[in-house]
Length: 116
Image (cartoon, rainbow, N blue to C red):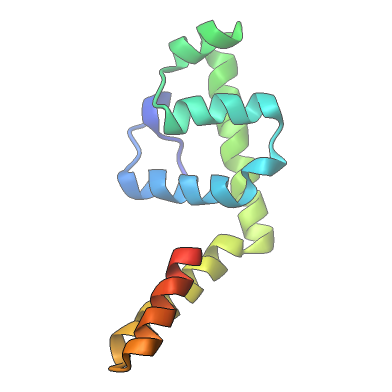
């Protein structure tokens, strides 16, 4: 998975969404310092220079931390598969919702999707 945002490689919205899911599932496993830099780069769309200035480190240091976080989050997913399982469950619920004419089942499936 390539880094994105202002990290200089122009990743797609799909990549950004996937990174967001990885972070939602595994972000708490990062250090506070890693989380701050990753959030600023990926979610707040700050440039490497802006983050470097805030953190008192070099742009290269920021870049390295973002890449390290990307690798850690992807490694967690490759081991635990929580995002993949989440996507599969969500797809199956949407399929149930699509196939049924029963309003109570649709209502329940919509509640489950909202809870995910």
